[in-house]
Image (cartoon, rainbow, N blue to C red; front, top):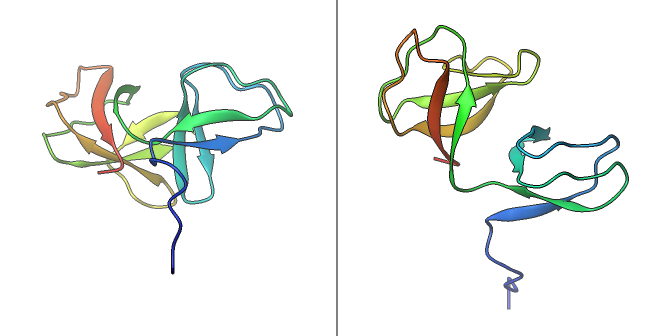
Length: 107
């Protein structure tokens, strides 16, 4: 057998160096996960990598299906690739005046 099933891939285990708050976006290498519950420093917890979430964004706009990236330095969703990590795809239109963009993770 070349692969053994472990579990569905909705989340992965993560042990943070510092406290993680519920709703916090965590970049771990190429992965971007969301803590659905607080994770204390040094304790294992779970980061969600699927689902639909609302993310803070700057004054940018998004159309349905646009790629959405996470700017870890600015703590906002952005359409800019650069060194930002892919969050997923926008599932609602978000205008320049909107403060959030709705994203399907991993798209």
